[in-house]
Length: 223
Image (cartoon, rainbow, N blue to C red):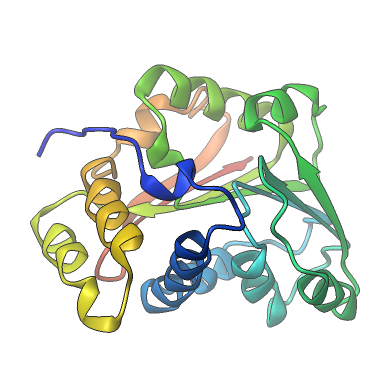
């Protein structure tokens, strides 16, 4: 199955749109089913004190990952072009002893402004598949320069995830989510595709594999 990147409806809707709000709730449920918070939590190391989420959305995925994490994280940066993080979510981060910061910015501009941080992690959940190869390679390069740990959970491209994506209407997902799920799988990853784009595999411990029933996991950690 050849990788194909197509526009997703949610990316084009205003944050206050009712269909967009419904789709974000759908995504929260799908993240639970795909266990992405758990995959991220398992790879957060004790030396990490600052974590940033690219395309963070409403911030709840990262919050879920950190709720029961045995970590020393003291700051969480939520990077997105739209500001849709609720005050309730910000307070929930604070209750964990984590200072939340909202960075409303283009991800490439934000990454380019970051300096090398040995105790910083970057996560990307259902985000990398939005980019064509050239932009994706640039994003991974910038992320490798700005962090010591990079974790990505993405759709796995293949017949079984494609079938599952076509059936999510059965659990109440709206037309936006139904469309975007199928498009996401076609733009997803398999085998070692992200490893091939990571800029320095010799200086990092790299793990790339299928995760769960539908997902693809990529982790790069500086030695």
